Image (cartoon, rainbow, N blue to C red; front, top):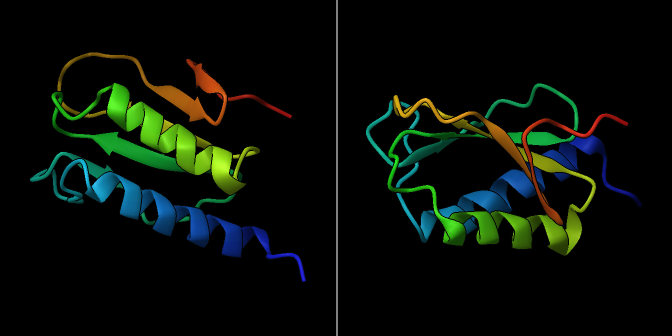
Length: 104
């Protein structure tokens, strides 16, 4: 049986959580390096809020891309910088980065 969108969202969340936890601390209150948002708002995206500017790196981008390439090539991860750095947000896909989502 094919997993539902909600099941796929949860699975991707868990895989991203595991992958990113090896690189930094997840904290919804800004006391860590990032927050992998645990609310599902629909669609085929996850949201990652960066709260420590030193956390965002090639290693983080690569880890996210690897997780997506594994089983979620049609999904993306919104990356929002909430650290006061004024960096624009972007979206990570299995095959690269975009400064905006890919709409169907």
